[in-house]
Length: 325
Image (cartoon, rainbow, N blue to C red):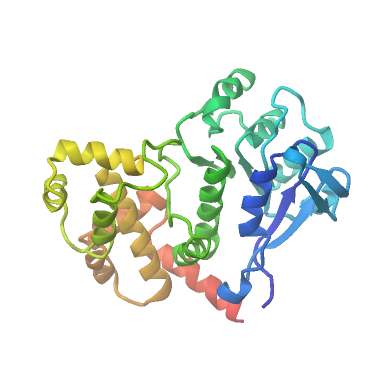
């Protein structure tokens, strides 16, 4: 399959976070074109091509120098383990040039410090790992640092809180480039949660393995299959024999968000998939996803995605037609 998707530059430099690099490379650097028809054109670039020693004793081979970032539509910056030090100046200059020509710049974890040193965080809402958020805010006071968000996408500058949040942000990018269905399929392949919104808390008070007696995971799966029904906090609580107050508390413990916010997100995702793969009229899409009316579908899409449902459908139809051609 041809790799004619967006061009991606994976940046490698001494002291970069090895796990940040490896996990995000699993999405952008691996050829998934057999599943999706095409995929990203990814290159690993470094200030000095060749072997690059990341942190933790991990080395990667970077065949390309920073001049190869000039054509990239997305540049990915892994964590910077020397937060108080200024990163290599050629790296900062490459990021500034890419930003000026409209490329997206994405950092993972403490990679936000690299963006800060490049001057790309000013007057933007950003995030980083919660333990480094205070330092980031003190070094770059013109940025608005959100220490709780999993990831933030602010006008082409994308920042993720940590390693796993970097994967969430990568899936967010895939969702925008290839659609919600592609992002969900990739998440399933990687055995990941299909969607965690950027506004979800960085840390959720839940054990590594859910309590076998906890009814909430089963409730979430059941609701996903019945999005067309009208749900309230009371009706959800009745299914698991909890009061609304207790359900809200347990829900936030498990998901990091509220039942209303989670339900809205799931309905929008379901609507995105229907618009991407089918020709159902808008009123039918609204009814099947529980958004009720075309007006509510339109308003919710504009609030959550910044586009109308018709524009969303047209965008992915045009991309599919281009790939087919």
